[in-house]
Length: 402
Image (cartoon, rainbow, N blue to C red; front, side, top):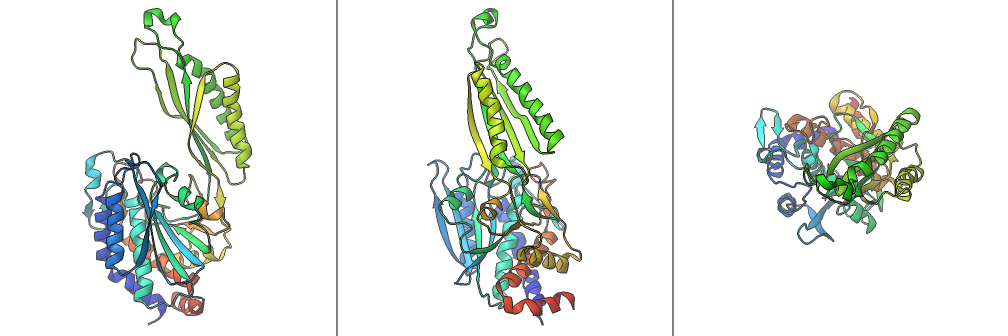
C-alpha cells in the first residue's frame, strides 16, 4: 500500500474521534468579544495533544487580566524549516446559547464555530496524526498553531506572536483552514477599521440651542465618506463601509452629546496600502480642521497579501485537493482579511483552504459537513507529505494518479 492510501486510511480511521473533538470544541463558548472564555478551550487542546502523544508548548500572550490569552503550538519533526498549519479557536458572539450545544444530524454538525473554524482545527490536528500513523519520515518540521483573537484583528493573538518573532520565521509555507467554500484563497484584502466619535454638548430638547448636536456635526463628515466610497467603487472597485455600527445620544428628548460610527476600508492587493490609509485619514483631518471635535480609534489594521499561484505550496495543495475532491480547486482573493498576511509579509507562501462554508459562518445556523472535515484532513496530510518529505513526492504522484 502506497503513502497516499496509508495517509488517507489513517485519517478515515479517526473520523469518529474527529467528530467528537469538534463537538467538544463547539461546546466551549470562545466568544470574541468579550474574549474572556478562552482558557477552557486551551485546556481541551492541551489534553487532546497529550492524549495523542504530541509535543507542544503553551504561549501566554500579554493581555488584559480579565481576558487572558494563550496560543498553543504543537509539532512533529525536530528540525526546520517548518510547514505551518495555523488556525484560530475564537468565534464571533453567538446569537443564542443554543449555538454552543452542538447538534449532529447525519453528516452535519451545527453550532457556533463549526464552520469558522473549529472544524479546521480538528482537520489539521488529525492530518498531523495521520503523518505519524502512516510513518511518513518528515525531513522538516510540521508546526500546528492554535491561536486566539482572529475575529477582532489578532492584536492579542497572531499580531502579538508575529511581533515577538514567533510566526513566519524558519518557515516554508502556511496553511490556514478558514471556511473557503471549496476554493483556495491565495490573497486577501487589507483592512483599516476605525471607530469615529464626534463630540457635541448635551441639552434638554426644549433648550437645544444651548447644546451642540453631535449627529448634526457628524452628517457632513458622513456625507463626505459616502462620496469617497462611491469614488473608490468607480475607480478601483475596492471597498469602504460607512456606519457598519452607529450609535448616538441617550434619549429622544436630549441633544446627543456624542455620535459614534465605524469605517471599514478594505484595500485590494494592487493598491498602495499606505496611500489609501493616508487618503482616509485626510478626510477625518479635514473635518477636524473644519471645527468638528472628533476622536478616532483603530479597531484593526492589516495589510493585503498574496501568494503566487505557481508557488510550490500552491501546487502541492492543488494536487492534493484534486486527488481527494476529483477536480482542481479555484484560486481566489478572499473578500476579507486573513491571517495569511502574518506569514506572507515575511516572504512565506501562505494559503487558506478549509472545510467550512463562508456563507453560513457567523450566521444563526452555522454548520459544517463532517465528510468535508475528513476530506480536508486528508488534503492537509497529503500536502504536508509533499512539502516535508521530498523523497516521497514520486510515490505520492504515482499513488494519486495511478
